[in-house]
Image 1 (tube, helix red, strand yellow):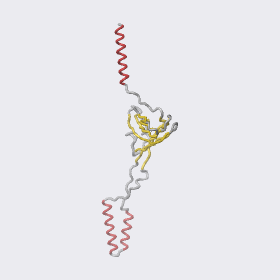
Image 2 (cartoon, rainbow, N blue to C red):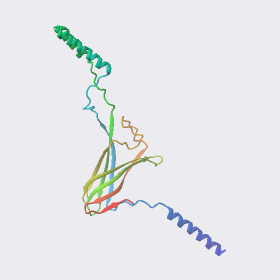
Image 3 (cartoon, rainbow, N blue to C red):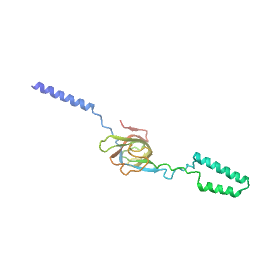
Image 4 (cartoon, one colour):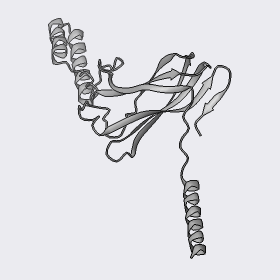
Length: 205
């Protein structure tokens, strides 16, 4: 009986030991830098339209313009200045050349992360990921990778900004605003790599 109990305890210990070894190790955070706060916003771009977009013509517009131009030339060649002026007025009033239609609204995304240097060395470069995940399932729905070259002295805070055309998640539109698009979407900033001015580097395992 005693021997059976010993064997049972030994088997239980081996099982727990194997589970502990197979468990994934926790990701180590840097000891001298912390993310104080983070946020993202949606910024409209090209709201004034395309500054390089000139007028465009369809095939019918071109054919009409060329016909009217020939009418003006014939009228001037025959000395009929009144007819030429009349055709020119018609060309202006009819606005044969159409303006390029405005492009649909488009949005970019500004991502921010406030980092505090709690160590004794000056930070030179920070690689950071803004990770988004579903509030309900906790599954990752989007990840953006950024590198910021910003010096952060010991005890100092610095806001890192990064502009991207990529939205936080596929559910966020780049063409229109939706007041409900943030619902069910959580995010966090993960520090991936830190380079210091003395040449040393911290790297996430």
